[in-house]
Image 1 (cartoon, rainbow, N blue to C red):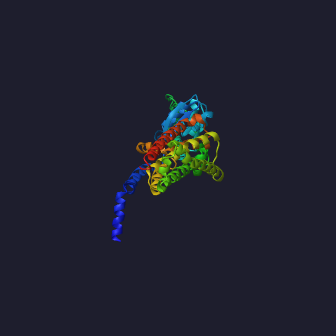
Image 2 (image 1 turned 120 degrees about the vertical axis):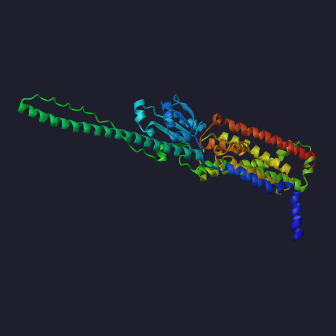
Image 3 (image 1 turned 180 degrees about the vertical axis):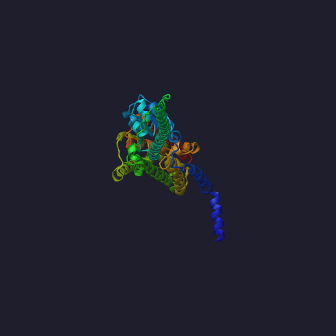
Length: 433
């Protein structure tokens, strides 16, 4: 048994790839995912629009919540409230506050909730929840500020009433002395005393009318694109991409490595075909099956989980087509670096795991530190998820989603070109590494 243990250790020491996965990978994953695992949204990107937007933004900035939890990215008085949905669809902000344009006098006295309407993007689940909490806290702080102002006015009115009462008390005393002096003057024929002056009557101060605002999140903030803030609604578009990634990368890499294990890769090398033609011939069945899977899982997601699909179907299909080229190219790359099926599965899973946690599927990218966030921007699932959510939930078009679609297309070109070059090398060198 001891000899068998030593034998396994020697074989493991020769397999540097597996040894590196066992030692280095857990440390790297712990550090990266430890920083990435953050559900909280520190500041909500906010745009203020509508007449009176500047006054509303200035007033919001006086509250602690406005300064600490809202990131004011734009103030547009010329933009009408009807554009709130467009701003959220184009992801200009996570929260849009529409000023109602009250007069200066009335706006200073009116509750903050009467001065604005709030809209948030429900497809960004954690940002929407943070926006609801921020608006609710703003309403609470505004109510507290107005209550404190009313309390100060009440104290001032109380002081004025006490002072006026004291003046009337002195007047009553002076009047009593005057009447006594007048009576004495009539009896003795002496000089008539000067009558006291009555104190001026002070008008009662006007106190503000305080009414407790409705602090229900549903009444304070209108949630668009995912009104019920259902987790499944925002997860399904990303899960579609994740499932395609596992199917495309893992299954494709296993299928190509099988040629190496069977010793038939050398036979492919002597065939009168270009490496690109060989790759296309090998991955075409997987590509067609992946398209079938894309249609099936999308239809099931919409049907079973009631996920809305409000955008253009052709854009969703085009994005899926490009994304499949990316994941199949990854599968070809993995197979070209792997000698066995086990190695291919290890490498494919090692590439797929970061996609789960760093693509924004579970943790929002905006909550990650910059040092970790840039890794998420290098992952194809990040950009596929952006387009899929934009099309399915927000009904966005090319004008809003051209950037992630362009990045995904660039990834497809680079990865597939690299996979072709690597496979060409493997074929021309007889299937060796």
